[in-house]
Image (cartoon, rainbow, N blue to C red; front, side):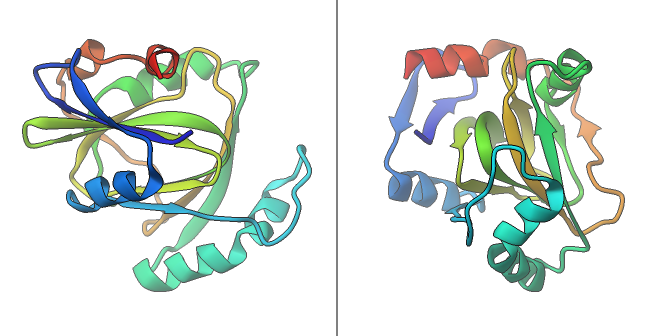
Amino acid sequence: MSALTVYLDNEPQYGELYTDFTAIRNQLKNIGVQFERWNANCELSPDADQESILAAYADSIDRLKQQYGFQSVDVVKLNPDHPEKDALRQKFLAEHIHDDFEVRFFVEGRGLFYLHVDDNVYAVLCEQGDLISVPAKTAHWFDMGENPGFTCIRLFTSPDGWVADFTGSEIAKTFPTLDQYAAEL
């Protein structure tokens, strides 16, 4: 189940929870975040490769490519056995911004995006079928959990891909982890 909790940035223990897709989409739209649901145009096997995954979502990918001028698209898979999962998790848990917007579509699994906008923090639990587009220069962080299990399509307007500018803020340490957030739902 996708979810959104809106917190004041200095009150991580209290937030307003939304679980209805339309309510989540509307709340995020107010801060310039695109939130969509996609369906594959064919059945995917559990061990589908990048080419098969991209083909299954080609219509939606092509629409976004035309809309935003994406230059590259790839698929990233992370599972609990990945040898660098802890290092990757720590990197993404630090609040950062990008010069480009960050677009992720969850083919399977889940992840928790935190968006720090003005005096609010928006915790967005993305699940299979969810697409999120975080606007450029929006402070955010991402938690994939202690035992990540997801496959995501990533879209970039720059051929450089994921390039972050870390804010140095410790705010991410004050909010629930993915595992804590999911347990509270």
